[in-house]
Length: 250
Image 1 (cartoon, rainbow, N blue to C red):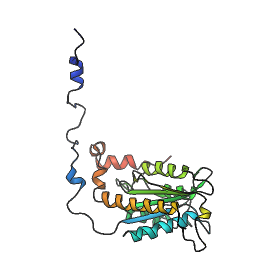
Image 2 (cartoon, rainbow, N blue to C red):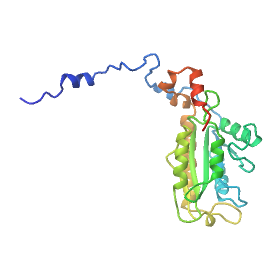
Image 3 (cartoon, rainbow, N blue to C red):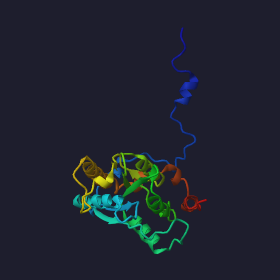
Image 4 (cartoon, rainbow, N blue to C red):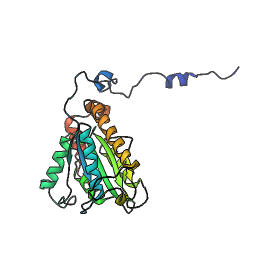
């Protein structure tokens, strides 16, 4: 006679009891809260950041191209100019450029980050902008649940180092980074004398990325608070949560 399919110990392990679960904070996912009957009707609000202050910055040109596409798709766009933004920790938080950036982040429902690749990484100029965005204001995270698209421009052959880094940052900022992305190789060849992007497969990919961003923003903006509502945080008081997420950086 063979071994029983399930021992008594196995049955106990497979039981549906959850003694460690705080029932007062536990809720089953509710599909009705994911798709509210009444949703926002205003145009999607999208903020675009770029990572170079050169006179002819290809990340800026690509950002302008993306903004035109987003506007054509019905979105409202704002572009932040990083010129004059101080390095993190070199100026107080009430610096005018810091305040401008933070107000735009709170206004936005989604974002586009575009960086050149420098020494195999995203630029410090774009990273500084992200570092000035607080993970939280009180107990509120200004980027949590908002959508994000990432793009990069390359001086040589196509690479994905910068967009990969930005994806990590987007996850750290608790953003919903869309699956698609754009990397433009030899960017200096992709823009004409009027600073407009030439027709190419690279341009078509930018269209794809912006289209996907608008769709994901429309899909998630009305339920982003529910999507990011967490069991562990429901167990905390607002005071405890604020204290934890507002720890000073080291």
